[in-house]
Length: 266
Ligand code: ASP
Ligand code: MG
Image 1 (cartoon, rainbow, N blue to C red):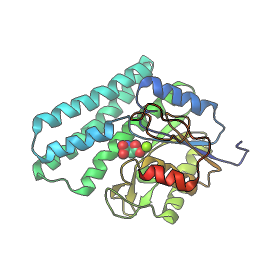
Image 2: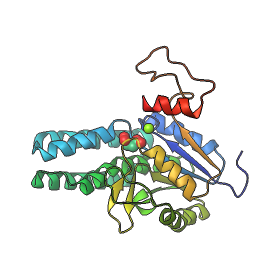
Image 3: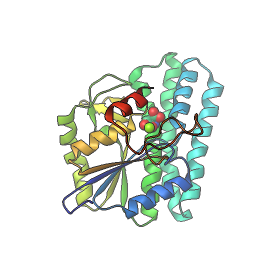
Image 4: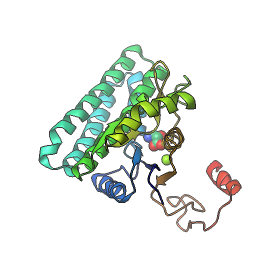
């Protein structure tokens, strides 16, 4: 287990962030884990798909779909906030949610006007899903007596400029992690970092490709010299098939790297 001077990175995916109930479970897992720890989160389940669909609708000029999707997005996060937090803690978080939703609305509006989706604008817009979940998760931890702060990975993970499928520049990321994450840990705060996104060295927002938040967690674990990386998920291990598609899929007791790669590929 983690000794003093060691460091743990924990990643929670979309299902683990999928509702107030699931966020509470994740916060309890964090509370039980050894310090110091850094948390990496995905957007709430299906949110990235919703954001993408909205940007496509904006490109096509479908004003009504854009408005409807944005209302759905806002309601999902506001509802979780109300269910998750005591009344006195809700107003600043609801305000933060509104600010992020407004940011998304502004980018969608720009795409609608241009009738095209510049990759850089798409990456900036998609990261809002993780910024919303990180805001809620940090607030949930705080409400449970764990001082926490949401961190936009744009401040930490430095990447090349392949928008939509960027690769990390590890030396620069290591420097940023030392500058941004270490002081938070030293102050006794738990950083809740957005998975999936980063920025070029000159600050242009990027994303690491769909499903990229596991990658984010590995990048941060390496940049922070973490002793361990825990990727929490909704199954007990690597399974013989996707249990949503194959009802009798089973957890594999032993799996080789080659088999794991084959399963991932398929
Ligand atoms: N939210 C992003 C996606 O759905 C990244 C992730 O969840 O890993 O692709
Ligand atoms: Mg995933």
